[in-house]
Image (cartoon, rainbow, N blue to C red; front, side, top):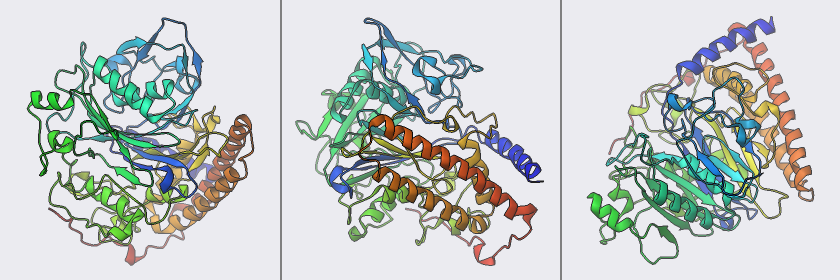
Length: 534
């Protein structure tokens, strides 16, 4: 009987995944500098939000290359599917030369858009729809932004060959520090050009963190880019809107193409703040996505959670308001668990609580499936493909990346390092159900929780809390291990978590029993809610 219930639900899940295969992605990314963290770590976190995302976090091994060889530059379906290049949402990239995680024998090879000179040695790193972290502790986060001047620049032959995903991967392959990565990515933009959308990349190493932002130009030749250093002791957040403001020449805390001011003037985009400074956000018309508070409400929430003493208002005058600072000093230093909690936030305890809006699901569910054009986003999203907190700390044997498969509320963050991952966490395909993959086990649990939230959430939350506590203790007790042993210990823990998640799903199915024993509480009915407007 249990097997029949599982099989029945599995078919429904597969249909749901395919039906939502082309929903626009929209991520939230945060940076915790060394002086802002409780244990001296630098952390970068991202939720990769989009039903069309590739669910795999991939290990790309270090590799030696023949002198004078070329590196292919691939397209990315994180921006747009390109069927003629065999670039699809899942798998996003089929490139066996990048390791087992990019090897799919039954899928056609992705075709390059172009080539750049290869270096003789590339570093090992973790990859996803976008680059994540390399073996030397260089870490990246990402979100897609809107520019009203040029919402997007589709790829076309003869123009820019780089989208932010491949830029980040080249940086992870070749760089050890944040500044080196920014300089390399800027040089690649200048020489090879950008296509796609405006983008924000958080770039950090064991000592410092930067916000790096870019925008294609109409010709696709070159592109606009700027980076700003976040002060040590600060926290920063970006949520689908460019965040850097005044462009300051001869400032050691900024980097950009020296021609950037002139380029903006030549394009007719240059705009200035009230002090007469050339303003990056205003110049690019970096408007909100879909709804007046789709982005800025998440920025407000992140800043307010870590620095409640600032008493920031959730309401601003317009999309180009500079009311929210680029970064803030947290009221208390942040742990990895504090950052994880941010990705489980749906405005609980505020007037914007997603579980109480007209778009909420039954049983007090905070997940919204209605069009997002009519409501602001929360950091938590039902369409998250994966989320991670990348953590670099010199006391660790190696950098650690805490990965949640699917959304962060229904799933535990599992620690890995930059090494080959267990089979359960690799090579999942969203169009093919496979019970041996964490992606599908997570989907099954999420489907039950999102349908009967108030019934299952307490059980799931307790299970997740215990798993994460155990994982934190494991990391803390493994500081004297070698890199190889550390990776093996974390992988064993990941396999144990996978098996426990399968058992949890069986427990939930037994409790569900076609709805028997499920009580609906009137208090969980959504209430009338009208989003605040400007």
